[in-house]
Amino acid sequence: MDIFLFKNQLGWVLNEKKLQEVDSLWKEFETPEKANKIVKLKHFEKFQDTAEALAAFTALMEGKINKQLKKVLKKIVKEAHEPLAVADAKLGGVIKEKLNLSCIHSPVVNELMRGIRSQMDGLIPGVEPREMAAMCLGLAHSLSRYRLKFSADKVDTMIVQAISLLDDLDKELNNYIMRCREWYGWHFPELGKIISDNLTYCKCLQKVGDRKNYASAKLSELLPEEVEAEVKAAAEISMGTEVSEEDICNILHLCTQVIEISEYRTQLYEYLQNRMMAIAPNVTVMVGELVGARLIAHAGSLLNLAKHAASTVQILGAEKALFRALKSRRDTPKYGLIYHASLVGQTSPKHKGKISRMLAAKTVLAIRYDAFGEDSSSAMGVENRAKLEARLRTLEDRGIRKISGTGKALAKTEKYEHKSEVKTYDPSGDSTLPTCSKKRKIEQVDKEDEITEKKAKKAKIKVKVEEEEEEEKVAEEEETSVKKKKKKGKKKHIKEEPLSEEEPCTSTAIAVCLFLIIDVHLEGPVLHISIYFLYQK
Image (cartoon, rainbow, N blue to C red):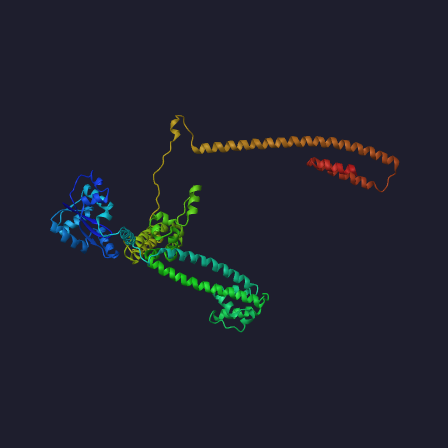
């Protein structure tokens, strides 16, 4: 007979059974009656509560033996002087080492354990199925909490809700303050330019109300003396319109809402800081409480975030840009929500991508440490952040320093220059004819250019001379025709009228004609214009 060690949610069970062939075992455990004929209960040690059961199961998972199991094994097994069959080979090695008991682990033992588990209700007397189901459920919940390091302080759902509410409050505050400034600006527009802080602006409105009251109001608790004097001076010469008391009451009620929401937002931010330091202290040290909370909210929970790779955490929050870049085949984004971390913000633009990649890698380690680690300290995050800051300094200082010398001056690196000469083929060696020197070639080219220029000038001069000769011929022909007409006109004039005082005019006209004709000989195009003018006269 062999003794079987079986762990159950109710306690430790020791059964006696003679090992048989594996093929026939499943038939012998079809019903509780058959199982009771084959397996006999040797001893049953019941757990007192769920905490004791959890301690026993966690010890077994870690490969340890608790005190209760040691007592049972020493009392029962050593007296029987029989080998102990166990389902876990690791546990059998520990028992053999600590208690010097021979243990058996084989496929036959696994089949027997499976049969005992299927008929457990009938093999243990005095235990109701309802009680066993309740104990099984309680132990499962306790064991899952232990495996996931679950505690009431580590509820990341509160972080998700808090950061979502914080973002909603910021949007509402901006809308309320913008409406308040615009509304009160009709009555006192100069106040908005003097007081830039939104909360101080609303507190001033709540304390004073109508602009007529600024002269007698004391604002030293809210504003410096210089700003207070400026506000009072602006209230006396304000260009705003007059409003009724009902309008002022509604504006003051809106200011009260803004102040209350601002105070609640400050309280909520402190709550978020404390909760982040309790749940994810290392993530808070690495990227800050706001960025860490937004990463957790975006992933859904801290455990879901711990399953992401570093490359996913780096671009978490930039999914639209990522898919747009993949669709248009452009560069993918380098950062998402992690861009708002302080380490990325204080980096120069050319190093932001590199720092965000390194920060994402270290942040993922911090997330997994916070999600699955037993320690709740932030030492790991502080150490990784110090490494990143040192890396950032080396990047900003170009990272290369002299080994010898002062140790602070940057090492001067010379620019690379390619000094190899590229030889080209010389085609002059192919010809056996004597070649003239380069100077002669240049002189010949210059002489040829001069000859062509002279020829071109002569051709232009010949063309001009021919044109002038043709124009002179035309001008002479026209002059002769004009003279004939004038002579005929003079003869008629002499016959009809005697000489008068107008004769000098004809001489002057002839002189003008002669002058024009001479001028025509010099420039041809003037000819037609001048003759036509005289003919018209």
